[in-house]
Image 1 (cartoon, rainbow, N blue to C red):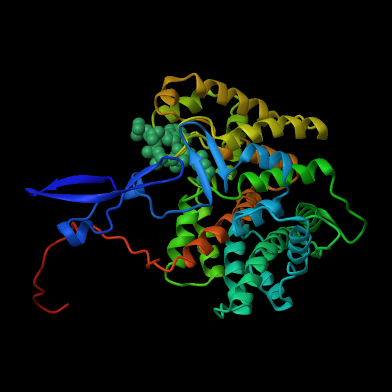
Image 2 (cartoon, rainbow, N blue to C red):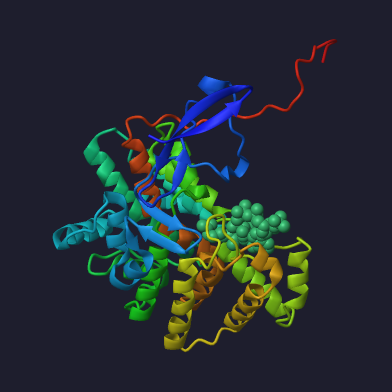
Length: 420
Ligand code: CMC
């Protein structure tokens, strides 16, 4: 087996090389400290692989994203979100029987415990729905404890996936003071969610196919993205053997930040500010180049080319707005910004391209989803990925608790004198 040689303090050490199925190369330094006394220093994990995984592959240079080997472009065209969730979690696409059963369970287990309804009353009316979602998902562990039994675990996977959408829709209904709508088996996952968001007891509501398709597509493109900030958080929390709901709730909190999933909300707020400024981007670009602002929805740690998810969403935005007959001025501003950034040396040199969040908000907006729900929508999409990654980690018998080292740079021993 090939090794990497390290010369350190006059001694030579060999470390094994690991090669992934797509040719990615890593140096296994698990014995580095034991052998040399030194640790590696990599804040932000720029050069660190935290695990081996067979779930999602990204080639950031070529703009490739695949779930379990299936290109994202094929999945959005040919699959629905529940099938993609199943693929991520169980490693293969469901056959027709498995899919029927899975879809039914996703509806039958989507009712949250009636006691939990009272929790909604405790939140202030303007509570951010991400605060509600993280608290409610964590609370699910009070009702469905982790018994360590396989059957309970299987059911908790379904409950998390199914009930997160119920919680999300109820938090919206609460914010507008409307009564909640229950999910029904005859509707798809996406249609049920739209119904729970927009139906009222006063009349029948059937989701328009264009909205159902758009939601499916949005959920699929968000479904997993290997070891991003929130997924790494889920793995980190799960490595202590914390239960699935606790780990997912931590993932929701990590996702909330504007550098991660919160960027979709930040993009729309940025576009609205530019619109209020008369649509003139000059001032905004000057601020970005002065490092006083960031162009939200641009840039990515892994993608150094166009994010394939952004490409899919840009096309979908044109299609959906066209069918719905919506003329959103923010679309023109977004396209103008994109074109300008892609031809500006500041962005070109830093390889900053639109990411998934640049166009997703415009689509959510066209679907009638309020801005502060955007990151919740990202979370709903990402839950299968978190579950898949949590299961993969927990099924590894050699998994240890995640516990990085540090380089201490504080004071050395100080003597305590006098009374305080
Ligand atoms: N606007 C302006 N400059 C940027 C941007 C941006 N959006 N992103 C990166 N840069 C600059 C940054 O200032 C730095 O410049 P310099 O080399 O002169 O110091 C350089 O590009 C590298 O940036 P970085 O912050 O070191 O890169 P990172 O890999 O640590 O950060 C990122 C990645 C996504 C946090 C960052 O690109 C960013 O803040 N983007 C805006 C927020 C956003 O859209 N987030 C959503 C990411 S995709 C969805 C998800 O999975 O979360």
